[in-house]
Length: 585
Image (cartoon, rainbow, N blue to C red; front, side, top):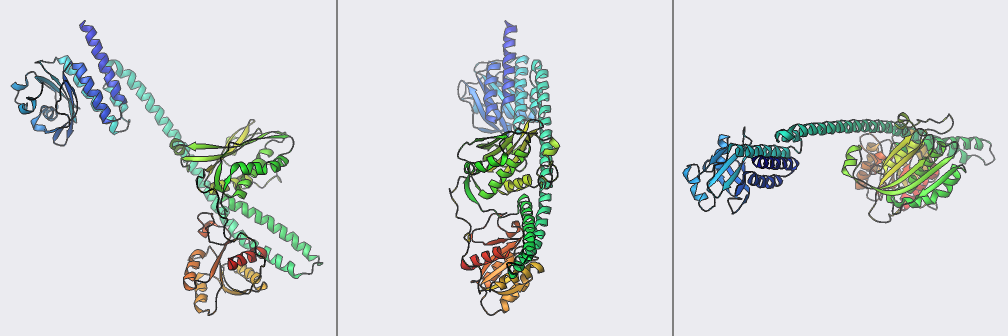
């Protein structure tokens, strides 16, 4: 019978220790301890006491009648304080025969005998008390059991403080029969967690390095495109001006047309570089990805050919805030890539949907924020890609196609557009199986429509007689822009930078109708210059131009309402159209 009672108590102690190891709040610990202490000791009451500075706080209790829950007493005037100060347990068989007992506090209670053990003996942080309504002297075995419970309580409190990092130590203080097994399990768990953490760190570092590499390539590409656009402005504008001066029958016009076509192809390349580097102007609309897919489906079917089966799966409600033309470009580029991956035919699938990225997913993917996203996925059953190829597919001019089949800018362009739109693009591929590109764009839950940017309509006339202040630090671009404006009747004032422009405004006595300024200039941007001149001449309107739009302070590529922008390379028609829109707007 004694053996059975001992086994039951050991089992109850083991259960209490296990419950403590899983606890995550002090309230949980208090509930477990007060119940277990009373059951293990056969007491009529049990208290859970915490050290609070120089006082003992009776945080919780389980008893046949109320004791001192919620009260604080000086450590020198109560038994729990004595136990903590002396770092050892005590047994008081007759409370009225012991001078450590504050009799006035105990007289209203049922207590005749008590036992008190410290929580953590080296530097106690609390105590566990057990009380009997009859005189009783707990055995050494009783006290060992209570102390074991107190030790496990100490570990549980530390575990809460350290958010689970000390779980092994909790288990080290459990009953001997459970100690080895639980310690081994905790060690395995810790090892698994460490390996997962190391893998997550490695993956995050790889994503960070890749992001930094892509940003560096993007800045380089954007800078090249910006400078190249200045040169193309001169080439295309002079080509157009010279062609206009020639008689329609002059054969030189045909040569100039070839130069213009080559220039336009070069301009298209710079636009792709700007898209990759996220430095192009986006005209944002609230659009439905389904409309993009259905609106281009017939064209895509003709594009992929008869030997490729096209399947479209639309989920509904896939609205995003983006530039519809650019999203169409993303879809087109992904479909072309899929088609080229299936030279012998296959199946191409386009689908839309809605996904939610939780905090765990976001923490494992660099640069991703949690929330709802709209999905646009393009899958093929083509040749697939190796891991090495996947790591480079978004780099400009990288291609696995044979020479003459593509520029290596299709996927980088898609990458840049998606990133500039606030989204993400991932690739999943296996050689011989196929490839899936998944585009995630933030869900839009605002207005269902946006007003088009100012100046979207084409003016009926392009010329004029107004005065334009032209500010451009590139001499060749300034010269060609001046020629275009003068040919169309405008009065042109020139400045090679902000300081000279301000000086012109200060000394010029007549009205200046329009400020036409580059955005990126030394010491002062075109946006800042426009503010300065607006303060001097409130009636002067402004038109900005640049080889790329990120530095136009257009909120990272989004057109700011009220700002009229002309994109380089300049052409006579494009420049004059924007000038007229600005003056008439």
